[in-house]
Amino acid sequence: SRTLKPIASVAAQNGVKNFSTSSQKNFKVVVAGAAGGIGQPLGLLLKQNALVTRLALYDIAPVTPGVAADLSHMDTPAKVSGHKGPEQLDDAIKGADLVVIPAGVPRKPGMTRDDLFNVNASIVRDLAVSIAKNAPKAVVAIITNPVNSMVPIASEVLKSAGVYDPKRVLGVTTLDVVRAAAFIGEINGVDPQSVRIPVIGGHSGVTIIPLLSQSQPAVQLSDQAKIDALTKRIQEAGTEVVKAKAGGGSATLSMAYAGARLAGAVLRGLKGESNVVECAYIKSDLTEAAYFANPVLLGKNGVEKNLGYGNLNDYEKQLLKAAIPELLKNIKTGEDFVKK
Ligand code: NAD
Ligand code: LMR
Image (cartoon, rainbow, N blue to C red; front, side):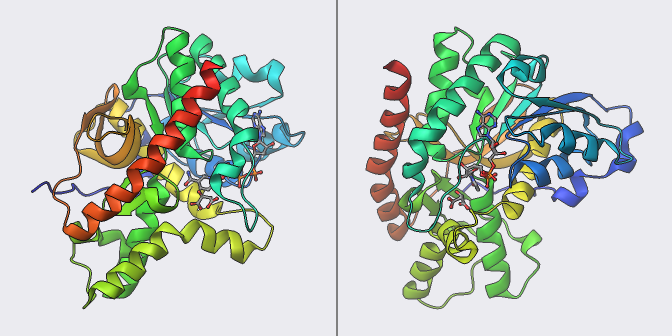
């Protein structure tokens, strides 16, 4: 069965000392939604990534130029620019190698991710229109919820502009993997960074499918009830944070960490590094759902290879069965929004 290759930590990717190596390639990274709860710490982490030479921060919030000024004082090589409002969007996107999108509203207690669709759909659509025009070859990494529907929206927009490359549009599900590793590390009493765990499907409720049977090291849980409880905790971890923030938004710091890890992996792939593997929600023909998350090999063109999800046990097969109708619905909602 398939084994997961080790994934470098954000700390390792952030090795600014490496910036003079000969394999260095310079990348322009855009954060769209850069003034928000995720956007600001994501900018902070990306400013420390030696592969980023230009960091363009786009948002509609008045504070955006200030966030850019603030980050520009960090003594790392990336040149920071701030872009505020739709009239500055094209400039932000121009020449981007990677556009990371955390723009949009987050959940409050009692909401589902789907409740965000109406506001966030047009935000992602408009960003995709600019990407199609100004950086059609950029890799697009979408954090905005509901991810299951936002990736189809961006894909349809790029398709209608004639520039869609399924290798270059990713939904960011890294936080699910990070959470699963954190929880397993705690249960097993090991460093969570040493845990390899694929999380497949999508990024909401039942569509989040942690493959605990494939965890390396094996999860030390004695019975199925405990496996079920851990699975549900990973599926509902976003809600756990939403409730704990009590109206103050959803996960931002762990998401920035996860987003920086995914962005770093994409850049290492673009640079030509081998064996760069992360889970991501991509165009897929592995299941009935046209988009599906599982481990992918990242390379010079974005997603180089879909690594699939290996063998599922009976419990995981049931989880997959429950996820597919929800994914199909979420994908259709996204596609219909653009077609209308
Ligand atoms: P936030 O409200 O703190 O920040 C969002 C930012 O987007 C704000 O600065 C806002 O001004 C900006 N924005 C709004 N409309 C915009 C537009 N048209 N163009 C550019 N920027 C625009 O929210 P947050 O906590 O940073 O969350 C952002 C999104 O990320 C939410 O949809 C949330 O559900 C999602 N999220 C996803 C994951 C994941 O795992 N994929 C994890 C956490 C949060
Ligand atoms: C998360 O998983 O933390 C995000 O998708 C935000 C949310 O609404 O739960």
